Image (cartoon, rainbow, N blue to C red; front, side, top):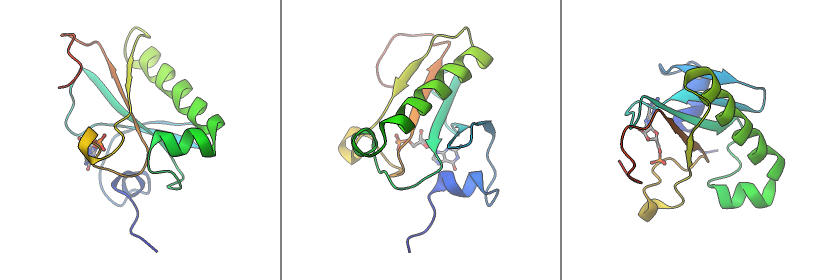
Length: 114
Ligand code: 5GP
């Protein structure tokens, strides 16, 4: 069995991290290297999916729960508006292969990458 992802280790309390939300099947943490005043990562608790393509095919309802969690974070920590980013593959800047959505809000400058 492979090692738990960095996100699972934060969820389990094995390494420090700020958990912002836990909806049952989905949780959110604050990104350690924020690119906006609100920069959270929404993560399904299951590690069954490496990226959003696999997730959309395997469990679209869980993807919808991630989007709802993003909206909730933006409502609680910003004005309700948000940017959602999924990196898919190493050459698209994905570094953690446990699917996650970047939720950014209160964006000061409109550029697509940090
Ligand atoms: P990716 O590049 O895979 O789309 O996003 C991974 C994100 O995880 C990066 O934005 C990175 O800053 C964040 N990250 C990596 N390690 C940690 C950590 O130990 N704690 C937290 N809170 N975020 C992390």
